[in-house]
Each structure stands twice: as C-alpha cells, then as structure tokens.
Image (tube, rainbow, N blue to C red; front, side, top):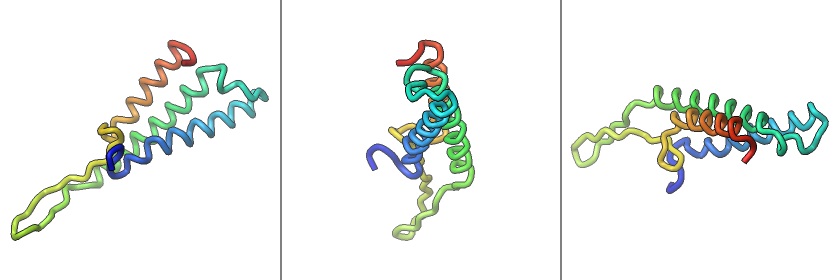
Length: 110
C-alpha cells in the first residue's frame, strides 16, 4: 500500500479510537459536551495512551518477525517485513504521539 505497509494501518485506527474514547470519557466526567474541544489535556492523554499502545505493538511486531526466507530460482533471499505508516516504522509512532502530546499541552489547543 502507498500509505501503510504491514500493520501500519493500526496507527490511525488506534489514535482515532483513543481520541474517541477519551472524548466520551472526559465529556461524561465533566458533564460538558464541549470539554474535549476546549481543553488540551484530553487530547494529550489520548495521544499518550495511543503512543504507548503503538510502541508496544511496534516493538512486539519487530521482535517477533525474523527475516523471511524466499527461495526463488534456486537462490535464497532474505526479506524483512516492514510495518510502517507514511514510511515511518510502527515502533517510532509512540515517540511521535508523545511529541505531539507535549506540543498540544505546551501550546494549548491547536
């Protein structure tokens, strides 16, 4: 795929799911339907949780996958599987979510 490879599709799915769950939770806790939109902490928290999940998935995926051995025309080729989203490996998306979370808290809601 052009945008993702392997398990890279999990990046937007997990970020969206965490954001939705945190929006529902914070709006219900504070009994304010606009709380998620007016404060930066819920988004930062959602990104931290999504980043932790993505880094664990990326780490386990990277550790569990050894190179694949492909036999073609009597020769052996070693091919490694790439889990990436926008050409960034899945294991690095945890750090990216952390940085976006910090920027969101420091500079307020974008």
